[in-house]
Image 1 (cartoon, rainbow, N blue to C red):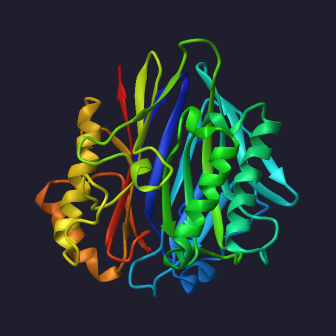
Image 2 (image 1 turned 120 degrees about the horizontal axis):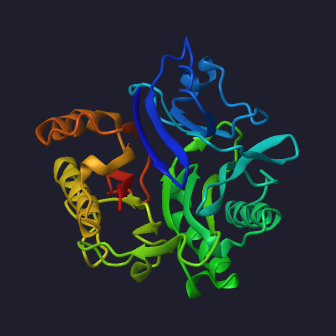
Amino acid sequence: MRKRHYGQGGVLRGQELGVFAPESGLPPAAKGVVLSQTGWGSREQILRAGVGAQGTEVPQLWLCGGDGQLPPVYQRLVVEGVSPRLIRRGACTVGVGYEDEHADYCLLTGVLPPDLNASREAQTTAVFEMIEDVLRDEGMTFAQVARTWLYMDRILDWYDPFNRARDAFFHSRKVYDGLVPASTGIGSANLYGSAITACAIAVRPKRSGSLTLTALPSPLQCAALEYGSSFSRAVEWLTPEARTVMVSGTASIEPGGATAFVGDVRRQIELTMDVVRAILTSRGMDWADVTRAVMYLKRAEYQEEWEQYLREHALEGMPLITIEADVCRDDLLVELEADAVKRS
């Protein structure tokens, strides 16, 4: 298990990432309270591990894909110094509300559509509406969402209809007039059989200047909005103590929006890493500041090239998990997301 802890606003946050054996399940969490737990593996690995319950005291989401060539992995956010409020919808735990001295937070994990028989576009709209409904109960609005994670079963079959449904929701809520969230949209099925499930975090500053949220550009890419995908390349939240940068799912895309290095996994890995690093560098950060990263590989066989890249760049110790999942274009072979924190 790899850990990276950081303090902010009187709260000690810990990102834990690692692999686990299905027969023995997950290792126990470190000292503190688990605010969110997600994991990936083949369906058989996840079922053997006996995880995935919705009604637990820990908001969690278990996603499945691949044929088990890669080991199952997990990530969880563990904190000290907060007393979170569980957020439930029916019998399901869908998130937590908590606070530090700078802001109130609503962290949602595994939001599902209520009707699994609805069309995939309708399920997408319903998931965004569910996020909005929970936020309303927490005294927030969708305008305060800083980041989303969107996991779609068979993503390549319906990514364009998904984008249309998200665009329509964003237009109706005037999201484009304010902060467009950072996001990951990746191809992963879930144990519940829905077309889509989501995680999100919303932030409400306690006073003027206590915390600011800003969308960041990618120095090596155009804005995703320019080719019809509604997310910011990264979002930074800044407090008097530190800056946190949440980099969206990032792939091998040229400045004009086309896929670069089609069919060449090594070159796609290199460009993806260069793009993410350029975003970090633009904010005075580097790989040493990363607190959590997820690499999505279209095929498990790309693991060897990915591990070689990490060795060549002395990044084996980065807090990172690697999973097998479809990316939003068939010719995109890898995608990386990352969070980084640096003290002011």
